[in-house]
Image (cartoon, rainbow, N blue to C red; front, top):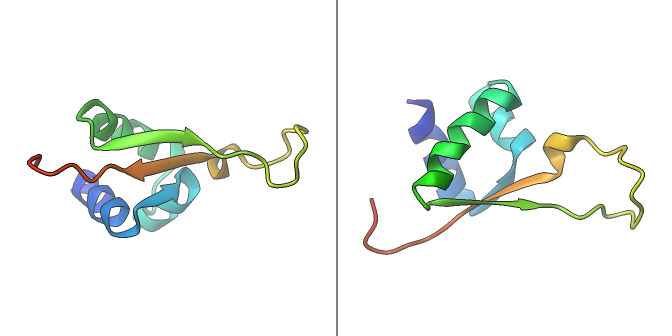
Length: 78
């Protein structure tokens, strides 16, 4: 059920951070990351890293806010 909730959320939004997805499904980021790996293996999701908006590399940003997941719109896949 959580896999389909993540699928629906990401396909509707197009992209979201790990923190946003975890908040939406009310789960720990590590658990959500594991679910997202299944969609990545199926070729439906791509993980990207968000660059720090401040222009520095101090690493004070929340790591879950720096992981961006993008739903790939691929026709002919279910």
